[in-house]
Amino acid sequence: MAVVHKMVVGIYGTNSYLLLWKKAKKAVVIDPGGKMDDTIKKIQDADAKLEYIILTHGHFDHIMGLKDLKDKLGGRVLIHRDDKDMLTDNGKNLSNALGMPLPKVEADDIIDEGTLKIADDRLRIIHTPGHTPGSICIVLRDIIFSGDTLFRMSIGRTDLPGGNYPRLIKSIREKLFVLDGDFDVYPGHGECTSLSVEKARNPFLT
Ligand SMILES: [Zn+2]
Ligand SMILES: [Zn+2]
Image (cartoon, rainbow, N blue to C red):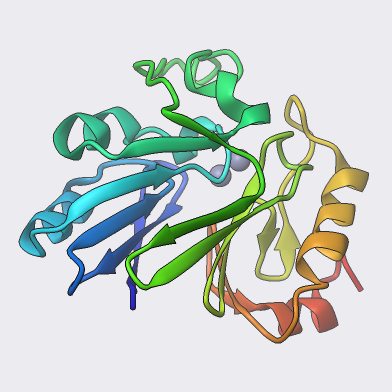
């Protein structure tokens, strides 16, 4: 069973998550959004193989450490079809606008919706467009990694290129709130929360 480490990285305090299967010696990184030294060390200390680098979407603050991580540990880069171009277009991933253009990294695989098997777990990919067209959430057991789709008491911004407010609300209501049971929500920024708390009290969704 995977152990989940939350690492806060980069200039926008992005939550990057390391999923580590110690016995199977496998790892997955979600959103390498800044300096990945601590993550890399944890993977190396566990003698684990980095299987996948999964991007919840293509904004620069979620991919800033991608090249470094990929160069050092490999791992297949997965992103949704509708955000794929953001990996190689610094206009689209907004790094140009910040004057910090990123080195380009191509996606290895496109993910739509579906399931990835890893060690004794499954990662379920759910397409939740709205913050960006190709935003995804990732479900591991009773945890949802929600990227910039859903935050504690807030939602992702929709004023950036490709953002769409009605679509975001629809994604959360029709793709996340309908999931059976309760889930911890591990967002792309800020504190963790739970799906039941957000259903009951998130001011954008009540
Ligand atoms: Zn974003
Ligand atoms: Zn972000």
